Image (cartoon, rainbow, N blue to C red; front, side, top):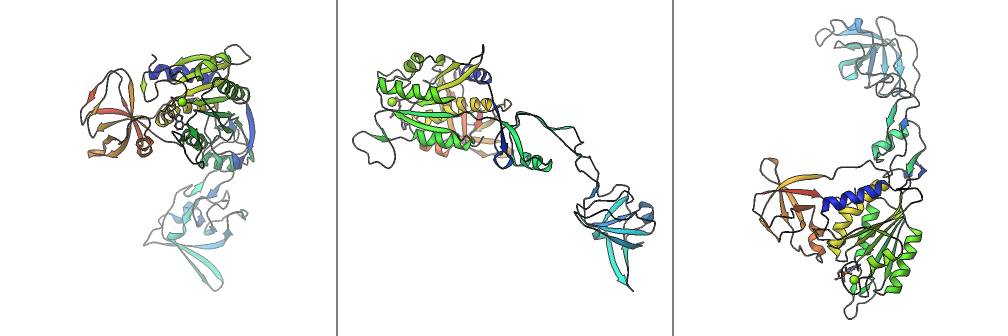
Length: 419
Ligand code: AMP
Ligand code: MG
């Protein structure tokens, strides 16, 4: 059976072979998407010298020796506000009131903060008494100091965050090229499943996996997601899977992928020309995970990714996190990211059988001297969503181990449904 690392690496390799298309979206829709090209600046940033503070524009020499006990008085020549024009040149003995963001004329050598200055307006001639010295360039944001015209500001593969939206707007962009998002089909399998809203009878249970996975996909910003259900019937399974393969880029089936008599998923995918990459991994929860691909037109290219997740609700969500999420990121053009793994100390000992890597659902708290302390949540069985609902991390209890004592170090992966 494959290890977690081997399985993940195969998923990542196949995802990287998926071809990506580019589309233009309005800036208002760009958050959460991935930049498809480089962004270069069409002008210098700042575009003109401007003031970082509310204060007075001065010549440095006028304030030589000025201080709290030796203030210097200058003649006020005028005022420039943000959005205003630069006005006349400054001459020795003069100052100009300049507000934050207002253009600073070339003749002004520094802007002294208003807090050091006292304005007086006697006999109609305004003067400013300055109680500090200054130096060339003080409180002036220089043209091009952040970005020079023509230079690259952002590169392809970057996730568009609120500051990136802000940067694009700063550069005057109304829209931006991003990678197209894959369309996703989520297919629940099982005769026992009914949707919330319908009364349960006999041994029926509510379908919780479809809403949970739909939420997980929405949290990643994916918009084109559809859900389907098939009973444990070979014909129906075939028709639902075939429809999904014809119409979606990523197919996520849930359940029916183990070794039961009525587990039709793997065989049906294979009969529909899906190339099996792997089936079954030495992990817990999630052993029966299936992964396959449909090849693309060009040699080596992949056109669709097919995941068969196990039906137990914890297994479905944990394996979604472990394998589907990284694949979706790469398909959307995100430059590959390291899994965020950190180390914590165990609050209580852990026991298991050797042979599979256990993803123990845990919570983190801070211990002594900033060390992280991890503790397993109650409800660790793969049908117990309560244990995952409380968890903020997965603790990686290594395959060959059977016991870890309290205080032992354990790798932990943070659970973040939003990225
Ligand atoms: P399976 O992998 O189909 O054998 O399912 C394993 C377990 O998960 C069984 O107890 C199923 O009833 C349950 N299960 C499968 N699919 C779902 C679902 N969509 N929602 C809730 N439970 C499910
Ligand atoms: Mg089933």
